[in-house]
Length: 636
Image (cartoon, rainbow, N blue to C red; front, side, top):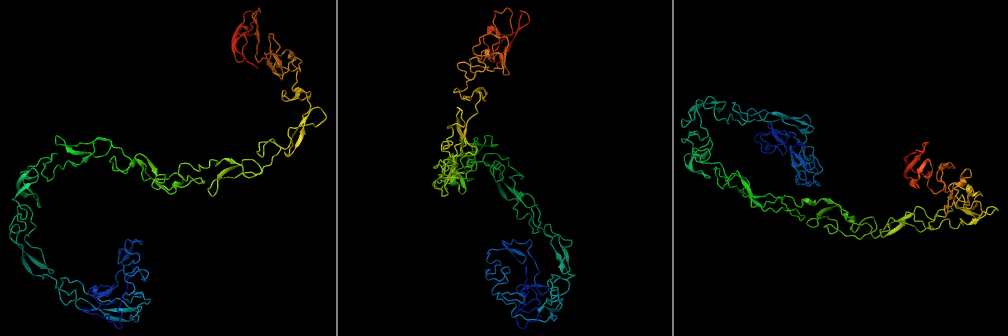
């Protein structure tokens, strides 16, 4: 904090001042009190001096306080922080209440009156110049004031001090020990012989009367049967012996001492005729303490009985034995908390089961800005921004991905959104999808990944018009050579035209697959195959199918649907082994019962065993005593 140095703004100022000088003095002048000095100076050692620096500790809050003379002052008006009456816009230092427009201009190197001039009218002095100051009355001594920096500095004089009883004029007023009650060597009587007191004497030591020697001084009166204050009356002021009536059931008595500072009625608790009893719950002051049933807190107040709510519908009353309380007359109704801005169950909370007031986001566009949960009936809640809510603002539905009308559906007026679509191009491929127009007015077909697709010759409907390779004549007959077999137009490798494809002329059985429904040998009959010359075509299961048409098989001509014999061994055809000689899909290795000695195979008595079926399988034993086991018929 900056402190100000004050000088008298006068043409001629004498810094040597007497104690009787009336005008307020500047820094370095003699003084008795701070009133002798100019505003802002203090009187220290009888010299007008700058106050000691005393910053505020702890530091003030810069946003709300200002430090003045070591004290944090609350800033009431932010436009006048130093509270000197001048607003900050006009005050050249709004942190110093001694600086403001129109203030007294001190000789301190500061523009105190905010007129853009410093120390105007102040006298100057020569550096090193000295002059006498102070007084030499009593214990005071004169001194010197020295000019430094063009300003007179503090006076070095010794000033008055408080008068003490030491035979000296400490306060420099021309009087010695004028404040002392006595003089050393004097003696006087002290105390009295009344009551508990005893007379004595006291001596004057260092200008003050000493203790009462051999005497007993009066003491404050206490209730003990004695005259402690030595006024001729014992226990005066306590009323001991006068009649009294103790509160409650104790009745009349007389006042008696109850400790040094108190009295009690003799019939009350602790008295010599104590009539008090233990406090009961009966509406009486049994223990005579001026309180009734005080040990039974809440008596007569509302109470909550044995139910699920916390509503106090009963009254605390005394029990029949007067020893306790009970909640009587309770109406047990088990109240349920409803959403109605009331504390239905009396638990101190309102609508606590419904989270009323909690933040919520409403449906769709109604959620713009945070809403609050509110009641929507006694058992239901809603977000305040939803339809029917206190903050609901209806909107018309637009195509923008937002539930504008807050009905729980988004862009419901445009069901085609997100579906595939074909934009305005030459093809018919739906390679785009419907999305909202930028102005929200409806759905438009956008984001088509490929447009104006050309139909190629590739077996694909490139332009999505429902036709494949249209305009190329694919599949139409053509003849690439001079034989009777016709070919057909197929797409070329570049997929932009066709070529005539005619398969090579081969035997029907050489085709892969062999039975493909084509006329590879161009004889007019597709799949006309019978290599084993048994009259059965292996490619036509109806009316009969040849399951072995391999001319390399020795038994190929016998393996066909016309075979009806029994076989004791399987055939081998093109690497395949099977007992299915008649090509009906069932293996039937068996022997009729007329055979004298059984042969290996499934027993005839079981008939035809289907694939996966189980029956007795006879194993030749070398004798006419066969062995058998249960086996599963496997088909190959």
